[in-house]
Length: 357
Image: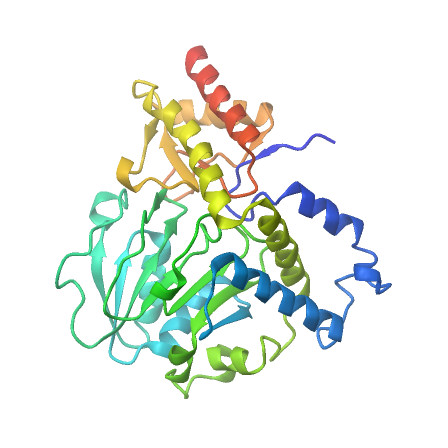
């Protein structure tokens, strides 16, 4: 079987070594005589697996005491609701850098006053806006950011330092680089970009923040429910958490977020170099100082060229290069499991396509 060059934006490429291990033990998980999808979530073996997953993540991101790691369902879309239902008392500040922060702010408006502390919406979300002095108003409960914007291809180069609790949607660049956890009070990541299959969200939340959450929120939407019940208030997505466990083990063997950051910089540089050296044939959407290492967005001279690019790329075993429907164009997603060999092949294909057209 020939594996394709997978540049899907999510669900996305997973490490081949992990896929092979999951395949090998699918019928007999850890000598239990059962598949992982058959094991009880109340069993000692599952509890051990979940605890190992949390401890590995704690090591990889140097998560200090005073932070909880919990596993949630409902994807990032439910987190748009939960963060505000739990913590919006007066007003919430948002840096609007794309569709996902826009949706988070819209969901939060049902629970209180929200406002944009900064936005790049008027410029097509082509850059990460600067937080100016005085941008955060008085009586603000938190500042919410989206660390990487999959649709528009922008990424925070560094995280802001602010005087209010910092919340982060880090779904699409989670574990692709180190995170200064202590700068955040709350962050979450949908698994389906860098760490596993769709169906589970990893959240890291400060103990003091949990303690001050709105007690009137229904139990299933309260973070303290999952803290108190160790993410097993109801049946957790066992297979998805198991898969995260295996990806984190792989990541630790490979050198952790620090090594991923080095690899991802090299991978992105290959593609951006082709774009920048193309005399305008390829045009990047994001400003250079806001470019994402995870999602590279670009256009060709005309829609007809873009259609031909997608069609020919698929003939050469590249998948996932069509841009998001809201932006159009093309997009290459370079998550941790996308190999440097695949990026080299894509860069060469882009050069050849330009030469032939």
